[in-house]
Picture (cartoon, rainbow, N blue to C red):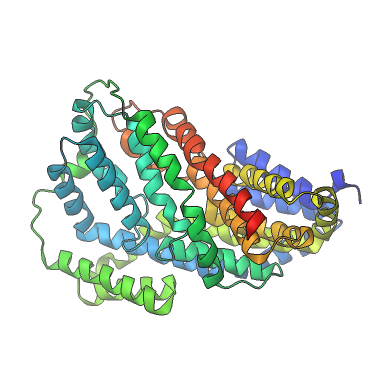
Length: 434
């Protein structure tokens, strides 16, 4: 089979092209999957059947995502997140460094112990824009701080980090390399260190004054909070967060911990019985897209394996790259960058690249630890720089409330340069020694 007609290669290139053209990621996966299967000579019905069978590979992670989306919706329903935002907005003033540190801490918490993802940004950031304008604070600095705070999930096994590491472990195991979550934890903490130089650079690069017009932002969500006094429902929400964190640590399962937190709020009445259906609908709306992309990505990997093109592609790539581990790691990382920048989600990217990376890395001679580092880094590249990533869209949503923050040039480009490049270099270097 000619390498140029390899069904896996064509599928991945087509997938990247469609995503870069801003076609829906899930539909792009389906088109690329069917195209690859047809090129390999598989009957159409066999392709769809194999793809559906592959959904199970990421079913647990998809379920956890939807339940966490529901949990975040319930927390917002009680009003506890709004009150927290109001208190912070009232307390922060004067120091750029203090504001940056507080935003980083809140962003870290939003991915770990209170897994509400980017839901806090549209509530918390717009009320602070006036104060930021008075300080002449460059919003690129704030965008970098928010993204930096959301990226440690790569190496912190709590909240979304636990989901991510579970996806890496499950898909590497499914692709023929036995990996446990503990193995991923043992490697990925080193990748987190790669983000620190980027944040230091952002601070020194963008701490200089930058002028903005005093345009009134939409403060609807902020103004709806009339009192910051905690009520019974707020205390129940806090208890639910603590129980969710405790169950997660005990069981290492986000699905179980999310269910525990939801039960606390439902049974104790913080969320009224008549509103439970609406909370699940909101949760599905918030996280359902990523969940379904992950399911389809699992089917994509299953079909690509069935084409037989993986073995051929691995053999050709291994022969071409076997002479240099440094060159091999560089090429592998660049391929991952292309794929994940198109998809925009590290969670959905892992299943797409794992089925290809695992046999390729094994053939070249990379250890299990080096393969974990390359896959994890390649997947995380999309979160830090892709225009389609929640990690970049969230900060822009808050910082552009008054129309003075550009998504591409003020969020995506700075974060790509300051976070993606060090992460790529770090993964390539680590792969040489692990």
